[in-house]
Image (tube, rainbow, N blue to C red; front, side, top):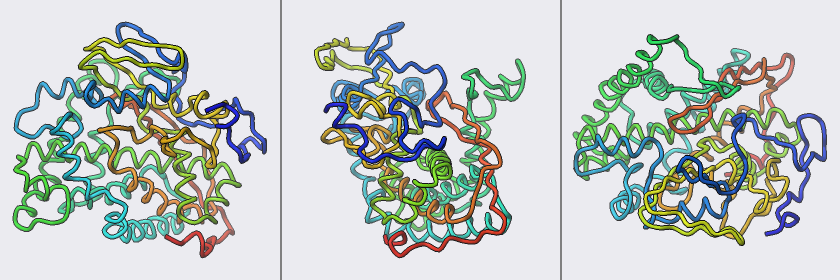
Length: 436
């Protein structure tokens, strides 16, 4: 695909006021400072760094030649016992079997039938509270919202949602880097190291005792249509169920929370795009959200290790990757590959053309065997919430703060303090914008 073919055909306004936009400017809010964008492939310290979209996609689809190496998979596998490896770390036939068995929980039809009403009810309640209070810190609101939706899918419904939200936030609050790229420590020196090591262990134990165990006991007595009931039917142990619950928590709660915040950020800063979003029918709204997600993938790096020699061809360039090599796949760079998506790939354009077979969000939900199964749920719950939130006359109290979590190479958006404008009312939705 040529740069001309890929370039966005519809100019969108820039928050700076430039209605045409510079094709080389960067609309991203969460790109880590100093992260390399070139070359398309390089080897440093024995690690293959891959930034070209076609090659990232190829590696993720090489299920017979690579295995999961991200999310501390190689370290975690050494400590795993039992007959059921976590779906995040499994590969090959066992992984395909697990994914096939749980796919029914994530289909669009299931989401609409079982979770849509819950999303709407909770979104109505939370947005009404924001209106009454005159504002809110958005990341706290979206944490509760995303936890409650994901809890229904997983089956974590026998404990207090606010308490579970706090426990999960403590567990996932690992080492972060600040906006300058330098590591941030909440406590200095040795004390900080000790607290950093103990916090996730304590939080996981609390999550197991207060959230997972009551849910497992309830479903042993009366199975339901959720993931925990399915795992019990498959003979999973309590420990194996805990690990799967943490996996779904990271995917369904932590990452969706961040995306809702960054999508709100883009839409609140671009009046034209926000108006377009609020007036659109659901497919067009989802298209806008997919384009924001393309620009702002929550997980910026995926990792694979080769199990056999692998050849990567990028135009006239040929790269021979040996068996046993570690590949660092740059999702953010692949999603903004100028050779595939145009020289304006760091701009936001929902009407952007893409290479054949490439999804609207590009690599933001991954690809291949480990592609995120909950992509539709994430977009649906984001849309349900933002459709309500953005009808309030909102403004930022100050710019949000972005940091990066090392464990999952993801961003965190915090201090998203919103204020409801004085003397303005609720914006009634148009009939088109409320159509499902």
